[in-house]
Length: 245
Image (cartoon, rainbow, N blue to C red):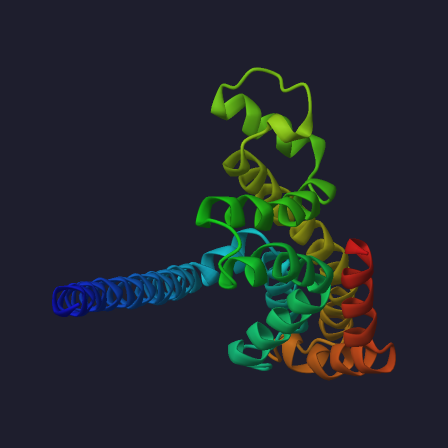
């Protein structure tokens, strides 16, 4: 009986360390998994902050910002104004107009790529591919065929069977080329009425013999008056935004 009691005590004494070891192992495993989750979150945050450094480039080549800022700059020159409106005002207006136009694409990128990526549901490469889908659709919808053909010829690629076969750098380059062409076409249409006013004022001054007086000094108030009376800013902004929608 004494031997049986001693054997039972030894058995319990041996079971205790085993249970403690298992518990400790489970705690260590949980700590390691939690550390991996924290590491993954930190990596995602670092990748997101790095991607934010490319936002200026994305803004310039994948949104209508280029078209807006070029038209606004040439409009200021057509009016004969040097520093009014300032560059900061024109850039801010072009920026927020670009955000308005790109609103649906931005929401789609956030819902399909950004939010799942930050939640750890997908990898970085998959998130980038999903984010490029709405951006590619927008750029392809607003790219001229001639510009796309030019960029395909420059890149020396075979004729693609579908739009999905076109590489993203080619799509972006063709979109920028189309935006530059469209911006200068709009700027010429905006420039012509003010050029006519300059010619009329110069002819009148020449006929009156006032050759010393610069025509720009006289034509500037008339150009501003015509532009304000016809609600020039509203018409210009509305038509440029409507051209995308």
